[in-house]
Amino acid sequence: MSKKKLPLFFDGAFGTYYLSRTSDEAPCEFANLNHPECVRAIHKEYIAAGCDAIKTNTFGANYLLCDDTHMIDQVIQAGYEIACDAVRGTDIQVFADIGYIRTDNDDVEQEYLRIVRKFISLGAENFLFETLGEYTPIIKAIAEIKRRLPEAFVIVSFAVSQDGYSKRGYYYKDLLAQSAENKDIDAIGLNCVCGPSHLCNLMKQVGATIKILSAMPNAGYPSSINGRVVFESNAQYFAGKLVEMYACGVDIVGGCCGTTPEHLRLAIQQIKQSGLRQSPAAGAALKSGGQPLAAVPAAKTAGAGGPASSRKLIAVELDPPADYDCGWLLQAAEQLKFYDADMITLADSPLSRVRADSIMTAARVKREIGIDVLPHLSCRDKNHIAIKAGLLGAAFEGINKVLVVTGDPLMQVDQRKTAGVFTFNSFDLIAYINSMNSQVFVDSPFTIGGALNINAKNFSSELARAKKKIDRGASILLTQPIFSRQAVDNYLLAKETLSCSILAGILPVAGYKNALFLINEVSGIEIPSHILDQLKEKSPEETRKISLEFSMGFIDQVYEKADGFYIMTPLKKVEIVTSIINVLRRREQ
Image (cartoon, rainbow, N blue to C red; front, top):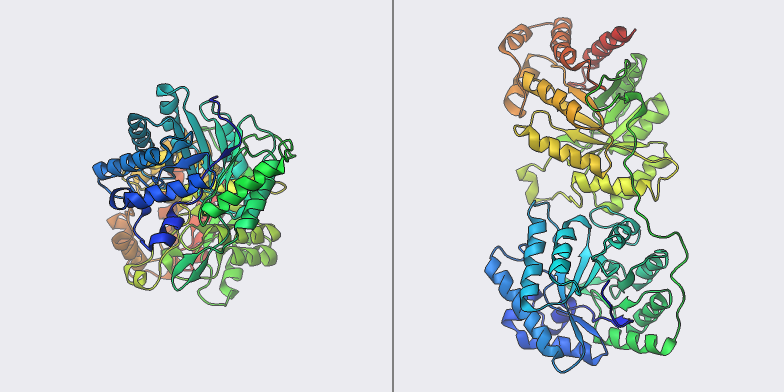
């Protein structure tokens, strides 16, 4: 581990302070090229406030800033040179500031590598990875730093909300524990999102760690005044909270959004005067948690690719009502329970058309019908606050299973008036719930389900996505409906490849018009022409028999390997679904 004289006093915010001084709403990183004198002056103000370390104005200097790599390199070089010029003749340290690159692009690790190599070429020896939402993407970049500069000093700092969860859904103690295990990281901590009081509370709960601890909170929580984000002036209060964190074992302190040189001047002054120091906060030592859950008990398998249990788990999907009349839904659920379905799944506003909340609907079905439920939880409409609130409510109702889905996108016409939230993608949401299982839902953790598209044209890519979901905490997958021999083959391949239970999706055909709709408007669905011909001008009973035979044809092809079946009710035709269940249960006798 590289050595630093401690405590180490960092500067505060650059972006919000620059905006307050200039009213320039362009990304502040461009000021390195357009207003270098202003950037230098801000660095000088923090140095005058007593800071031992300043960050380069390069937080957002990555390919999300612009798609011109040469321009990004110019911003990084100018930012580093301005900072070095500002500290010339002093012993103030310059840290290469590398912000979180939030993207699902496969090349994000390469972008981090490219950035650190640029800083190394400029002579950087100190690095701060800050406001991170996850740990894994920076590992290679940090290894590269230490390979080329063994004495470099590396700080890794995560951004989490008041409840300790990052935007990617990871719990802060898990993130810090993972970082603490990396020999190439010298200091770990938290910054941004939280104000000083909440960040102080989180740091007090960290417990023992072999790493140096860092804390750089926001000034507080901003207000919006005339369209501008404004932080209240609270430098004295902020300073007191930094003293409190220092007293509990935090050796690197600084500020994030909303802080100014005055915040840091008072904090540094009070820490030096306090003389307070305790051992690190009480509590268990940091250790990684969040192991994936076991599969749903009723769908146990003998291992990947092995024969499934003789009793197949049967889950049936019903759509919540589009109004407040729940009568048909409850009647259908009761009928399905009578025919020995194991579980009712409730969709979350499918096709982006508003329906009753899936968790609340599931709670009513569970209470009144007494059947197990699996509400779908879409990433589309809720931020992490609403998602956690919904899961807490589900837990109150005894619901401990959830199917995580991305959610159908909004129709183009709707996008003029509203937009999807998408705080999480499905991987992040699975990780978020899995992390809460080890922190919030310890006594009754959620079984987390995910979707598997067996109709994907590039199924190897879909398998990779499924493995990622399993790694994040999913323990059961539900597939899209099987409508082709290729889908059957893909399901069997998934069973050989993936280490979790997989329910085979079955969507019975409700009739001739429904079949035409599926063929022409739903991607990946194939219905043979002879089945289509058979459905023409048939009575409801004749249609039920044809649909049953068609669905059972696919069920038979996967039956031996299947953990169970996920049957989607077509157009409220519950009688078709009960016919399928009846055949399956008789087969098990």
